[in-house]
Structures are given as C-alpha cells and as structure tokens.
Image 1: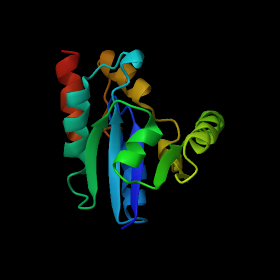
Image 2: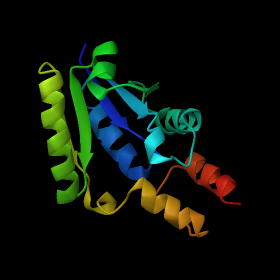
Image 3: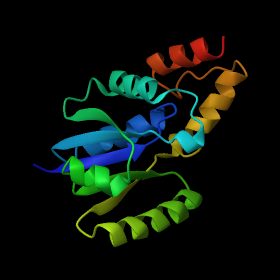
Length: 158
C-alpha cells in the first residue's frame, strides 16, 4: 500500500488545504493528514481542535485519515510508514522554504520522497493566517474554509 503524509499546522484547515488533500488522495492508496502540535507558532486552535476540524473536513474522503504529531516530521513519517511527503505550494516563497525543508528531510531520511502539488489560482493567495485575520475582524470567510471551520472561527471571535 502506498501511504503519503500531508503535514501542517492547519490552524485552521482551509479550502486550499482541502484542494491539495483531495487531489493527493487520488494519487496514493492512503493519505495521513498530520496535524503538527506547533506550540511555538502560538496556534489559535488547540491541537485537539485542529484535529477535529480536519477530521470533519475530510470525512468525505474514504482514504484520508487525520493524526496529530509532536516530533520531527521524518520521525512521524517513519512511525506511520509513509514513504511520501506531499506539500502544497502557493508561490515562490513557499518553494524556497519547502526546498530547504526537503533538503533537510532528505539528510535525515533518504527513503522518504517529497512531492509538491501546486495550488490552483483560486487558492494561491489563501493561508490560515489570512483566514484568521479576516475572521478576527468579523469578515466573511465563506469559500475560504469548510463550514465547520467557519463556525469554529465565529465561536472563537464572538
């Protein structure tokens, strides 16, 4: 079985993330969406909340499951027996960062391959931080996030 890992903080999961996850789910047998603890980023949502929101968002994809992790990415990939990391790219700045991370991950474990999937134009500008900013200012996040995330953001900022 070909298992791939799509890692991220997902604070919160967005329509752009879901696009990458959905497209990747057609390429391999199983996708694990790895939700990183990322305490240093000071996430808006707790790890548990981010996992639940991601699970709710991908429940329509039968070969996708969501798991939290709090270790090196390659260690988590080894633990779940994923040989492929899938990353979404929006812009050249994403590429520069992800290129460095890929090189580092390769040094840590040469058996894990990284595949990049380009975001479609309608999501190239979209990020979790932009969504949080819009929501914090009581802006409309319709179309940017799944309905469960929209409700969670409204509850956080009410």
